Length: 146
Image (cartoon, rainbow, N blue to C red; front, side):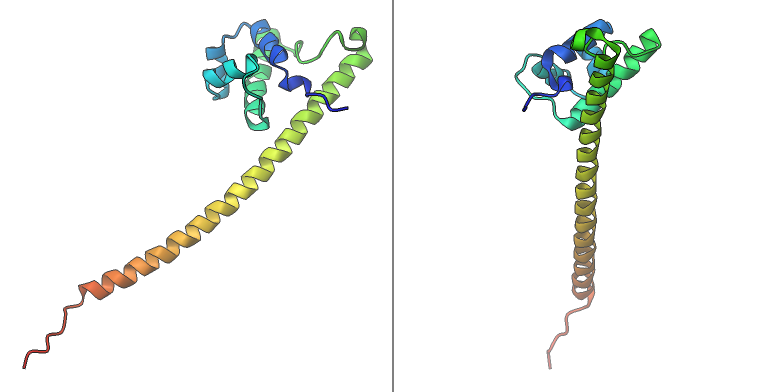
């Protein structure tokens, strides 16, 4: 069964944002994700990627806990008739999606750290090359006048 994770659903995102009394601008400020991107996700023009999803939902979790003192909107109450089992299953599914997203972010961080190391190695090589040529050009040219 290939279904879109609940947290990627545009209506789900918009519903939680509105239920917590946040505008798109408020959410943008809290999450560090642009308001235009949030608007595009909510309208279905863009997909929510794991990196921005973690930022946005992290901000929404904090907002909901600040406002209510507990999480209410991160479960689908109609799932399995709103039973305890349905809510737990819903929460487990969301947790799994975020765990997979976090793992993907960690892999991307590792890849970027390797790139940074590579670029620093190249920078050091070019610094050494520059120093070599700087020293050559500072030596006075020999004249061969007799």
